[in-house]
Amino acid sequence: MDVKINDSWKQALKAEFSKTYFQQIVTHLKMERASGATIFPPGPQIFNAFELTPFDEVKVVIIGQDPYHGAGQAHGLSFSVQDGVKPPPSLVNIFKELKTDIGMPIPTHGNLTAWAKQGVLLLNASLTVRANEPMSHSKIGWASFTDAVIQAISAQKENVVFLLWGKFAQEKVDLIDITRGHYILKAAHPSPFSADRGFFGCKHFSMANQFLIQHGADPVDWSL
Image (tube, rainbow, N blue to C red; front, side, top):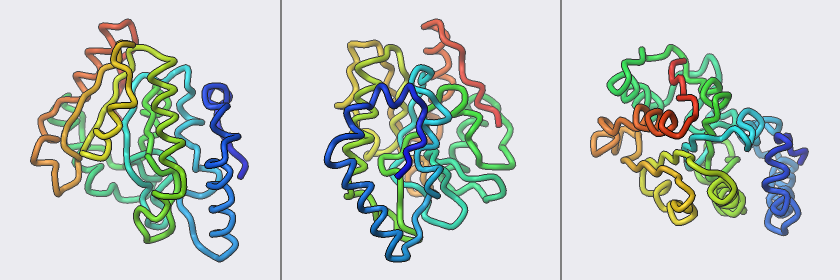
């Protein structure tokens, strides 16, 4: 697998790429493709989050669980979909909270690349999935890699905002060293099944920007 990833990430994660588990991920993906399986996102976009958001520029981390498993949706950014694809329900709810929180008009598309280019790392815990089979790659080693990503940000950076939505993301909290000034915000997942139980009204977007400004960083322009 040709890892298309920004050089700053190659430096921050250099130990991970040579580890056995990472080589096993590569082997697993090659075997599945050889058997005719369709895997999302497409190969060149698997590490899209790391290409669009260099390690040196990370200031907010939004943790998702699994890439979208429908055709044309996933492109390597958590919660984001490619242009021309209808925003899924969780993303619609994110937009509703943004409108309530900061008055942002509901976007006509669901492509969050603009956030990624401003230092918002849109990180899924698994970076690939088989078509129409949610969580199908959750046990192939990606968790080891993405946990290492969170730990690298935590250990090597200061004053990063972590948005942990839902139980799965909140279980990552032990990977974050709050003594380095990181800001952890927790809420329910934006899924329609849980958004009414603590995601709506969380005001995470304005709170994240207030924190960034207080620590000398540019706020995120959440508009799309």
